[in-house]
Image (cartoon, rainbow over all chains, first blue to last red; front, side):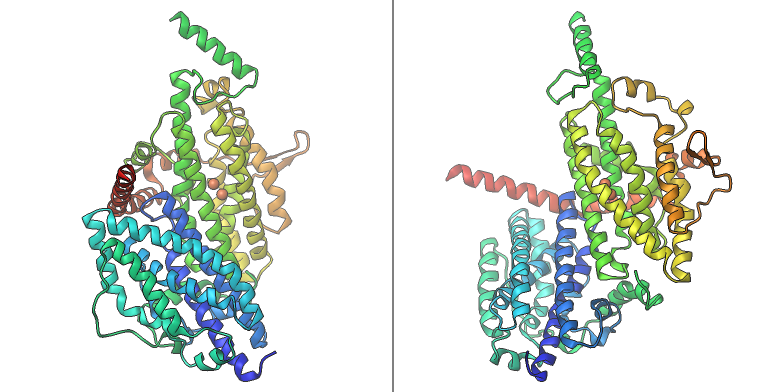
Length: 255
Length: 314
Ligand SMILES: [Fe+2]
Ligand SMILES: [Fe+2]
C-alpha cells in the first residue's frame, strides 16, 4: 500500500506507541490488590487492561506491516531494553497513588489528543483501530481527571502529595511530543498529526485542570529525552526482566 | 414475645415455601449475624484472592494470557464489591468488615494462604479453585436470602468463565513441552488437596451445618459438595493426561463416585488457626495498602463533602 520507506517508519511509529501502552499497562497492573480502595483496585486494573489491549492491537498491525512472521508476543517478550521505543515517563516506578494519578492524567491527555488525530490518519488500519481506542482513552482520562480534582482539592496532604508528584514527573513530559526520526515522512503523508499542535492543546487542557486545583507547573530547565531511540531510565531493564522472565525461560512454546 | 414467635413462624414458613427473605423482612438475629459472617467472609476471600493471582500479572508469558488474568483479577474485585454491598443490606458496614479482616477478627478462604509459585498455578487456580467455588456458589444461589442468592447467580456466571479459561490454560501446559508438563503437574500436586479442603471439614465434624440448613443458608453438606466437585474434576484431569496426587483414588462402580484417600484435616485446622505459609503475608499486604491509602480515602471524602456544600449554596 505504501512505499517501503513509509512502511518502515510506520512500523516504528506503531511500536513506539504500543510500547508506551504496554509499559504503562504494566505499571498500572502493579496496583492490582494494593489500591487505596476496592473501587480503585478495579478501576486501575481495568485501565491497565485497556492499555495492554491497545498495545496488543497496535503490535498486531505492526507485525502485519513488517511481514517477517514476527508475532505481537515476540515484540513484547523478546526485545531488549535498547529495542524498546516507549518514552521514559511510562517506565518510571508506580510510586504512590498521587504519582500514578498524575502520570496517568498527563499521559491520558496526550494519548487522547493523539488518537483523536489518528482517527483521521491516511493509514486506514490505524484510523480504524483508533476509533475504538479513543473511546477507551476518554473514559481513562475522565478517571484521572476526576482524581486530580479529588487529590488537588481534597486535603492539604493530598494537595501536597500531588504537587510533589508533578514536580518529580514534569521533566519527563516533553518526550511525549517527540516521535524520534519517523516524524517528518509520516506527517507529510497525513499519516500522523503534527505534534506541535497536539502539544499546544495538551498544555491548555492540563493547565485548565491545574488552575482549577491551584496545582503549579514547575519551572525547570532539564527535560528527559531519547526513549523513542531506545535511550531509557535504569528502571526499564528491571521491568522487562520481570515481564519477560517466563516467556524467555521457555521460548518457542505455546502458552 | 408472642409477636416474636409469630414472626419466627412466618419467617420459617416463608423459607419452607421456597420464598426469599428480603432486607426489609423480619428475620431472627441469628440468621442476620450468620449471613453477615458468611457473606463478609466470602467478600474477603474475593479480595484476598486477588493477591496470589495478581502476583503473576506482570509475568504472564503472553499478551493474551496477561489480559485474561488481569480481567479475571478485576472480576474478583468486582465480586468483592458486590458481596460487601449484599452484606450492607443486612446492616453491616463495609469499612467495619474490612477492618475486622485486617484485625484478624474475620476469616477468608484458606486456599489463599498458599503461595503461587509458578505460572502454572494460575491455570490450576482458575480450574480448581474457581471450579470449587462454582460448586459451592451454585448451591448458595438457591439460598433463602434474596440479595445473596442474586449475587451468587451473577457471580457464578463469571466464575464459570474463569474456570473454563483456567482449564484451557492448564490443557495447553499439559500438552506442551517437558518443562511445561512438569510445571503443571507440580502445580496440581500442590493445589489438589488444598482445594478439596475448601469445602470444609467432614459432615460429622461440621458443627453449624444443621442450623444453616434449616434456614436454607446452606442447602447441602460439605461432603456432598466435595464429592460433586471430585466427580466433575477427575475426568477433566485424566482427559489432559494429568495425574491426581492420591494413591488411594478409585472409582466405585456401584455409587458412581470417585473415592479419594484420607484428607489431612490437621493441616486445614492449622492454617485456619493462622499457621499457613502465607497467612501473615496476605494480611500484612492488605494492611499496608489500606494504611498507605488512608490519605487518599480522606481526600476523596473531603472532596465529595466540599462539592456537596458548593452545590447546596448555588
Ligand atoms: Fe470470584
Ligand atoms: Fe473467579
